[in-house]
Image (cartoon, rainbow, N blue to C red):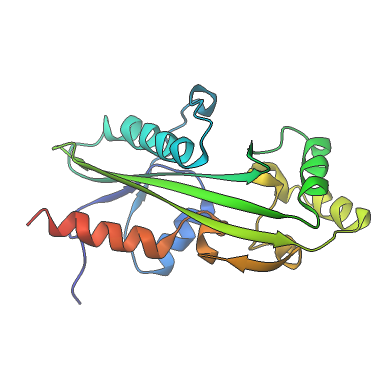
Length: 196
């Protein structure tokens, strides 16, 4: 079977969802979380923010990689122009979900590929619009009790119990899960093609 890339692929993320999605389409890869301080990136424009953060994550891991492709990624939720990161507490998660209830928000994921040892890079992002139906207080309360919102931008994961919160998605579904598979795949194809 022909592979797109024969070398080593390193995912600079501890997200189990990104690892699952890469596995889903048949990639072999190692996981090496970047553990950078995400607060250091202060871009206000969503697309610049996710691309800058994905680059910073990939660059940090690339420093310890002799040969291979390093992939960094970052996902944010944007409502009324405000970036909603991961909730700091259960109360914060509840507030975020109350704000998203009955509204359309945007999910942005940026990704960066760095080739080592050369340092060649490619970076892009995807945006998906998600509409939540009106959520009852008890639904939000039950979901927050699961603790699932705590490690997710915007305090929800479309692939868990909150799947019933969204009644319309415009754009890439996998982007909302945390990684825009199709755009990444096409970018990687192009990136590797330039290599030969």
